[in-house]
Image (tube, rainbow, N blue to C red):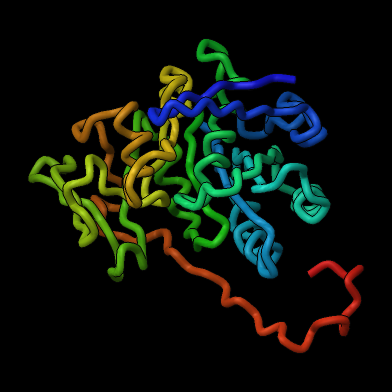
Length: 278
């Protein structure tokens, strides 16, 4: 068993254990992509949880991810053990992947996906040493967003942290960044709490893998106000001056917050075959 100990300012010690059984049956070497040796690898960390539309959501984004070269999908379930639904889905997806899981403790209601994203970061730090890591970038790709393929080529050559607008975020058609005449970030085009250190949506940035490995204590914190999750990580990695605007100087929206409607299943009790996976 391997473990990482993540200290939160609240004084709570969380031991996030990564068992070999949680990881997909292939090693990193077996899953590497020799056909694209010169491309930086995009590592997408996706928290997911059980719900009627889970497989539909995963299917939708897998249809996007499958088209991306040099891509590794880290799927982290909010469960105590891997589920057969996600395991079988990933095996049939044709996407290079790692499957992990960690259950959010009862009573932790803020910031769904926080522990799962941290376990994804933990796996990267346990898998790669800084001096031997592949060239790569880390992106936090929720399973209910919609992604334009162009976004992934925008982020692929991130030096430190790249940023871009996000559609349907914060009560707006889109949230974005304010750039100065030199094309550097000088502020945030948001309605919700623009005083945040980094008023950036989770879908609106990517981090160079080396930076994640160089800063092993940089994680998402549980003890922060809503909307401060992104800042809790980025403050330990960069300053505003380090941010790299993408998407044509932040004038193009390439990712959107979307959700599949919860289906009406009122008449389904004891009617359909529970052995058929949906």
